[in-house]
Length: 449
Image 1 (tube, rainbow, N blue to C red):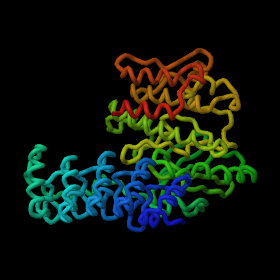
Image 2 (image 1 turned 180 degrees about the vertical axis):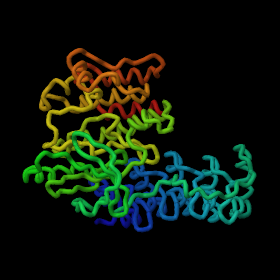
Image 3 (image 1 turned 30 degrees about the horizontal axis):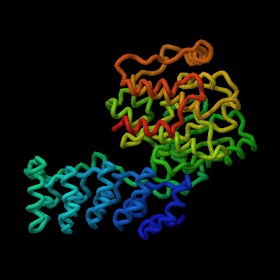
């Protein structure tokens, strides 16, 4: 594998750009010490590369093996502009590493006054004690200590010492991903330890288990007869699902092609699907602000997928059951829920999210981008109302009424007028008048702010 970490250390922008353009490359992977590409750019001071990675969706608060975030490294090495970049993109300014140190501890220890002032202005606390009981003010020398003390008082901080409290056992931090996950394609069924049966659907059996010491989900496809042709088609099509290059797409890690068994393997998401988050009593409050963030995640993923060459796309039906929620509440389109060419052709199981034309036209006659936009409109409605669309109807009744009787979701009063307007625009009866996801992303981004 090309050494993306070496290129980031060296600031080799051309090689990094080429590497990022390959959809099978995961920018949030970590090296042997858990350093992600963004960690290295922040440590070495490569601002343009850091901006590129952040723009492409690098995780701002990912931690290495020592629980250092990119902000820790940029602050320790005095890279003020990179610190500003991370703060603009909502870096956690008071997160601590394994020693209990915040980014401000390191800025003070190394005497980077400009960086320290930026951190305090952004809300960094001067009174957080590390494992040794030292606060950032204890680490600061001379005039820097007085300047930060005065700045903290101006910002209304309580200067009472906050004692160190180990919370690593809570598992709240987001590690950079295991770099080996994107290297495997063909997987032997005997290497999978399948332990918990999660679901049975017409398309297959879903199991939770372990592979290479990673928590995974294996979906064993339900195939009546696995012929040599089906096995060949499966081998040709599954690489389209290995999209590691976008933070809002959950890739298929690899496949098992051992007739009569065909299976896909993906990373396990403990929070489950968006459908479960909204309707499953998870205890997570999805308010309007969170709903807009989730919608923006999905829109960004779909804009990326629609930007792929048609021959590199897969058959995917957008709905809340096919959106997975990461540990940090990031929404990710699950590529394992895509359909292969030989799988359930003509069968529909979730018509409530589907466009009228998708229900009553041949696939060759459907504008797939416009049809996905209709599904996204229903998803927006679901996020806004916290209700399951047409929950009182069976799938067959629902599909028939949408296709033939103009059954549509109704927008209740009380929903944000801007969101209601966007839903109506995305659900235009004329597919040609629906917007693209590239048009919707900036609208949602503005609404989120």
